Length: 342
Image 1 (cartoon, rainbow, N blue to C red):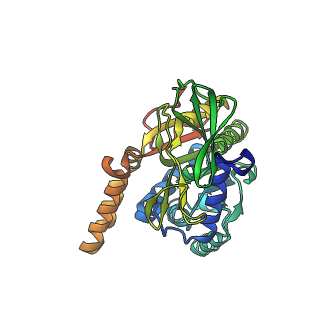
Image 2 (image 1 turned 60 degrees about the vertical axis):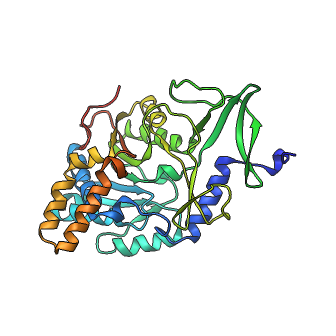
Image 3 (image 1 turned 180 degrees about the vertical axis):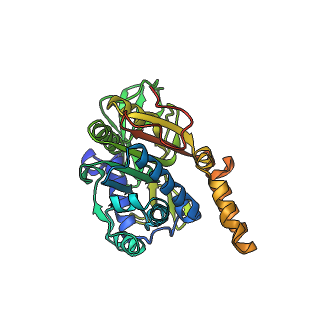
C-alpha cells in the first residue's frame, strides 16, 4: 500500500534536504571534480572575461564581483590573480561576494582568497547588495532542487519520495515559462529556485548594470524526462537509495526555461554556447600553450590534457552549456558568437 501523503516528501524538498546534509558533511571534491580544479586556465579566462565586461560597463568605480557556488574558491582566486595583474584599476574597484551556505567551505574560501581580498558571504543570490555586478556561477544550478511532474491518463501527478521510492500524487498542471509541448507519460522537471534566481537577476539588471554567467551541464532544447542522478563515493548511485547526506543529487539544467524567464524579465540573454566553443573563443588553447612552453614536459602534458578535457566534444565540451543574461544596454559579453536572443 502506498504511504499516506503526509508521510511522503515532495521531491524538491527531499533534494534540498539531502544536498544540504551532503555539502555540510562531505569534503568538497571527494566525489567529483569541477572545471576550475581541472585547469587553472578556466578561472583565468573568466577573470579576463570579467575585465572585458567591466570595461563594457564603462569601468565603474565600484563593481561587485560575485560567485554562486564557489566551491573551494579556486575559480575566484584564479580570476582575481588575472584581474590584479591585468586590470589593477578594476582590482581596486571591486568587492567580492560569495553565495555559499557551508561554514566549512566558507573557511576554505577565506584561506585561498586571503592574498587578494576578504570576501563577503551570502546565503542567497538575492542577498547580494545593490550596485553594478558581475556574477559567475559554475556548476551551481545543477544542484538546485527540482519538482517532477507527469501527465497520465488520470491527469497530472507529482513525484514524492516515500520509503526510498517515488510515489505519484495528484496535482494541478505545472506552469512552464516556455511553449514546449508536454508529452503524456513523460516526466517534466521544473526548477523553481533556479527560475526565481534568474527572474530576480533580470529585474536587477533592468535597474542596475550587470551581467551573470552560468556554466553547467544540461540541455538547450525543450527536453523532458527524468534527469535526477547521484554520486556516492565518486560513483553513480541510485538517487533515492543512498543514505541521506552521503550522495550529491543533481539534475540537468533546463537552459531553455531559464532563458525564457530572463527574457520575460526584459534582460538581454545570450546562449547557450557549448562550453568547448565558449572557452576556445576566450583563448583556452593559446593560454594553455603559453603555460606549457614554460613547464616541464610532464606538467606541459597535464596542462594540454586538462584543456582537452574541458573542450573536447566527447568529454565536457558539449555536455556543459554556457548562458548569460545582462542589462539590455550592455555590449555582447565575450565568448558568445551571437547577439542577444530575442
